[in-house]
Length: 608
Image: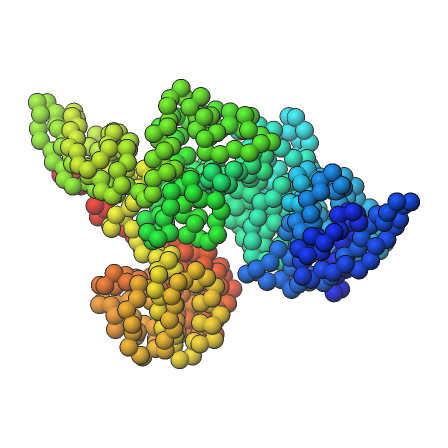
């Protein structure tokens, strides 16, 4: 098979064996393609058919095919061809002008450059129907990483203006491949490529990751995000996902890449990540909640809370319950038993049960198949003298769906902290703790180690609370119409009901409000709905956004700027800061954000 690409008009020419170009293929092929000619004959039959067409313009909202001057992509490039595996070749050659490069999923086996052209040939490692093809004005940089069992070729396919990042990406990929090979087992491919994408994505594919040009230069891409994509070479590629029985790979990859790197850096950062997962799940509308086993892919941000955060917390609890050594050995066993095959949650359960020697059926059943989360409360606590020591009595309650839990309890004493664990099933139960030293306070799950709903007092309002609301009213200032036209579609891709009104009109009831306008205008609007002064961030930076919750329990996202024309550009990345309570930005500087502090948690009681 060959695919030739002319970037001048984004023309593609696909040459396939004639035997597969029957009526079904022509009927199902993309509308931008058409059959042009046949070429080459034998004594028996024509052997090649040529299809040509101009790739459609890049559209981030739809389509497997697209092209612009920054690159072209053909996802499932030949999925439209009838399934005739015995007749299909297993090699693909890509041809481009010398100014461009092309690559495909599969193993690169040959490259040829002339003064005018570039050709690369790939051996299919999966099926040809799943083949993805990428083309662009790329310059290729490469290095290799030596592993105990093999040498892995690493490449970047970046545009000239992105070459400053190539060496850092190659070094980072080498580091992550080395790390996960040691933790799990041999890297399952012969190479790994990082490819610059003209669309806002971050995809993990067999032996490569396709990353948006918009975020290549962001520091977090070289950290957790890149590690996440590399680890998918094991979880999702090396061991494939049985989607019909639940996607386990996103949660495991999140925990072993994103979370593990945060934990390596700072335990408090890891705690903050666990809290963020729980906060996202706690604010998830009931209509979007689902049992974890039903999660298949992240169609939008709401799904990620279940498939990524909830799943990662399940692995976190497994690690805490079984211990670090058993957790690591279980993952190695899962890899060795399933590499090159398809696996589901049952295979994960089997690996953990084999290593630990424990029956984990009840654990997996409740966290994978039950909908909702337990809601804990510390209903009361007291202390009394008992001989030479003290006795702390506490009442723990659980509402909502009944879960069997192992709940961490932290008791602060005059001599230091004491950690306890209690097994807790349903409703309410009283617990007693006998201590030698005088207790000062008692806290329930203070480090957010249990998969549960956070309660009021543990949660600060965030941008996500606004974007997840079912009904949203946008209040647009007189001079902010253009900024609202640009920013709102980016923020509210999943809003079920959005109304836009001009500032000054009577407001309908809604779950959330977004106010957009000039600094003084938005401050004045806020004063009409909230008592007290606006938070100090309301005038920080040249552009800012912050979230508050009014007396009717409605969330407000205030977006203001000294010059309203700056809002759309300077806050275009706001959707990446959904876990923040406020974001500010100065011209030419990256946005900075934070969360309102949470004080007087109801999950802690003073015993002084």
